[in-house]
Amino acid sequence: MVKLNQEDHSRIKKNTIKKLYSNQAFSKGHLLYERLQSGIPTHLQGFVKNILDELIKDELVLIYGKTKYGIAYQLNIKKLKEIEAYLEI
Image (cartoon, rainbow, N blue to C red):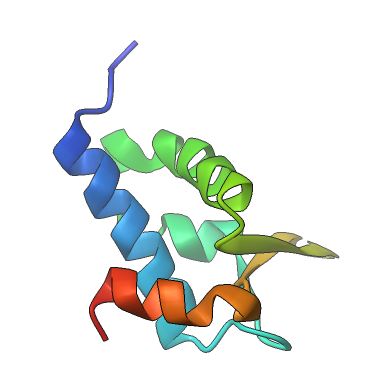
């Protein structure tokens, strides 16, 4: 099994948060897991789920719910300032 190095970990984490932020997935918006995986190199796509779980644990990302297309995620609007600081916006 391939282990994720720190650089790739932070890159995937930032990419995931940036994708949710740019699509305005806050209170009403959401993104499906497949959309969050896209744009990440195929050999690293398996780690997206682990990083999403980590972001949910940190309460930066929330599970929007299950749609007919799969599980959808959104950013925690209550942590918006923390998210923008992380993205340096």
